[in-house]
Image (cartoon, rainbow, N blue to C red; front, top):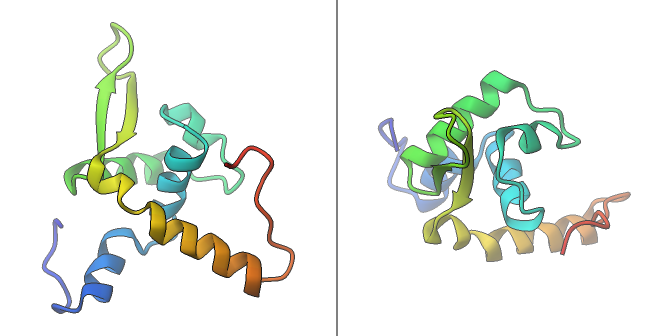
Length: 114
């Protein structure tokens, strides 16, 4: 983390890392929709802005949840991948999906999600 934790509570520290409005949605897109490129994240239904997306991808990289690799000769074109640490969030996200489907009316799994 780039800032001092609020406490030593594992829930608080995890929320400091992934508990904002956008970070888990970026991880979801990588994990379930195989999105890798900046433009693909911008196409998500939630409508993240470019400056927030840039900030969150940088934070995810700094915390070791994501790594980036260039996909062309252009140095600014990157593919983003979940690291092993990022992939380890899969059961957490699947539990959130199951909870949402059970307790939140009108939620569903999009056809493209596996």
